[in-house]
Image (cartoon, rainbow, N blue to C red; front, side):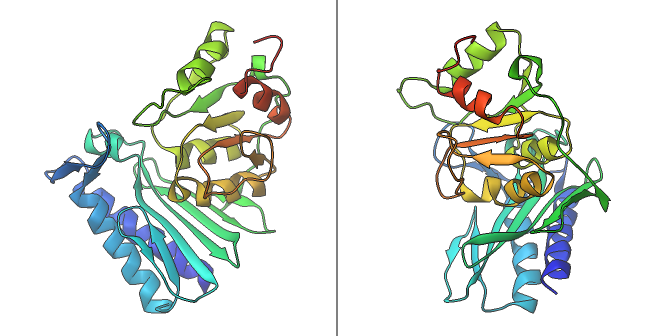
Length: 260
């Protein structure tokens, strides 16, 4: 039943996105320049919550707009009602619903749905990952220099060494193609599908990555923090790859790669 509820929740959020897309809706700004939230974000979140609460009224929910709805349940739903809100607000179809389900601190289900390009990614712990019900797998590329990578940039840059722009500069000056979609959930799913060989980002929230991380791992990939250690969605740094370039990309991100 968890799986069916997750799928219906993602579909409900996506239906709201489609209703508002390229229409008229209110837009406001959160902390930082261009950190947008729209009327559609709140409406999508409401639709998702209604599905979850109908089946599991006692479950913990963590969502981008509503924050934490705390219960003593060992199940937690981690919800991003629209991942890629800036894209959505500008009529760009690179945005999605992202929902992960955690049990006792372990991600067990994940769904990412972009209704505008008709792609529904799903993973269940131990059962692999699918795109529109067909199995997917990560790429086989073994060199960062031959990889196609994807990244994102935080809305505000901290004055710190080895910033996002420093890492980006090292890669592109070495001729490595690095894309920027504007949706971390989609970035992760496209690594899982083998379209990208790796993804890194300096500052994510749990709702950005929870579902996508499981989808990458179940597709045969590897996800870590910037040290190469065990990933937690409750810390900001992420590196997700096909596994074959992982250690090398960790070195690049930490400015410890002799060739970059």
